Amino acid sequence: MEGKEEDVRVGANKYSEKQPIGTAAQSDDRDYKEPPPAPLFEPGELSSWSFYRAGIAEFMATFLFLYITILTVMGVSRSSNKCATVGIQGIAWAFGGMIFALVYCTAGISGGHINPAVTFGLLLARKLSLTRALFYMVMQCLGAICGAGVVKGFQKTQYEMLGGGANVVAHGYTKGDGLGAEIVGTFVLVYTVFSATDAKRNARDSHVPILAPLPIGFAVFLVHLATIPITGTGINPARSLGAAIIYDKAHAWHDHWIFWVGPFIGAALAALYHQIVIRAIPFRTK
Image (cartoon, rainbow, N blue to C red; front, side, top):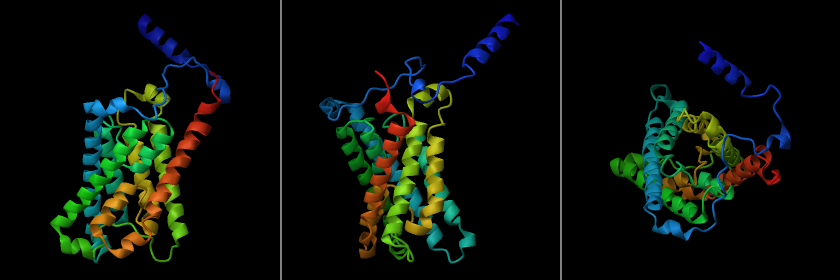
């Protein structure tokens, strides 16, 4: 009993009732270690198998992501009775659920980016080198192209009739509307990625390994619910590029720039907000 009483006493007094706020909270008395900024160029990575293994993991994850999600979109599109399909909610769940599963599977190998916008945001925050970021983006785009290509190979006629899952700005919305939706949607996703993978949070929640993939997948789900009617929801340039290349119709390319510019702006804003406002990293005392 004495041991249990001691545990209770220690647990009750581990954190003081009055916690410091603002810059006072940025002290060296902490139970986690902030990872050092990644170098811009790291030539040594090119001779490491783990570097290429991570790229292959990104390729496979993006391949599976496009395969499952485009099939889901096509299943909804070809039904005359939307009540007989999973509908927009089901499409959103397919995207969010796949991100949850794939981030869980690949986080320990590559970080589970599966999205050039996420990679770009983490690059700006110095979480990975430029060498690795470019390699990830190339592998993500190749995986997306292959994933969409396999779907088209299964059912070419239906694929072309049903739009192939390509992102376009819907009728009734302007290019500005589409760009704004992509910026805000990607901001939500990348901000969630930063928060879920934060070093301080990882130290506190390390005993619950699904906590990082879960909010990331849920953020993807919610953004899709909001923006499918506007752009079909890109927030992932690789996903948009893969579908556009395999579908290969003129209207799929008219607004394609939106699905690169919007996500990259959203990712940059999320990185700046998290690093400067939330974590106040530039204002920490050495």
